Length: 178
Image (cartoon, rainbow, N blue to C red; front, side, top):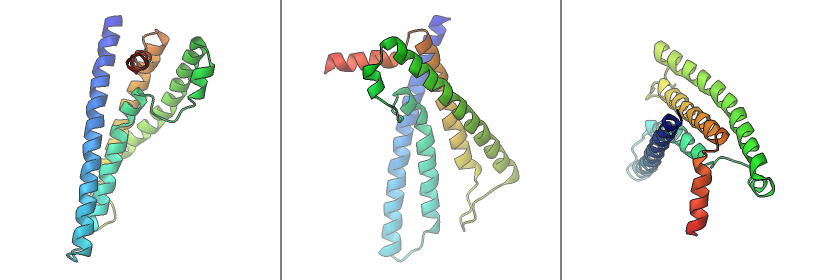
């Protein structure tokens, strides 16, 4: 069972890195699209009403696809001073409690996002713009990203509870390499 959990953790970390790379590419694409929009609108006098909405969709996808990677790196907002003043044992309990409470919130929001994505797909919801893209697309990325983040939290809870936290090893390697 332990080997299975380690393999799942390794696979999840690799998947999260892939999603982070995809997220970065989406941000670059959104940046290039906005530059294109500015150039065509102000210099060529061509209106691109759809471009801003396209970029919003890209940034929603980028944000939620990178959420699990950010969680894996413990890059979300936290109180780092507590790491220094608490004993390792109590710090572990703090991380477990924080991950568990966060998982409840993420599960609730992910569940609702899947519900909205499905309703938007079934009922053909679109935006009110002239382009009118399907609204299931951003809802899907929200639901997918939050689900992978929840999966990452479950893995972190298991790893922290069993003293197999790869984040601790990652931090130790950084300290030794510095």
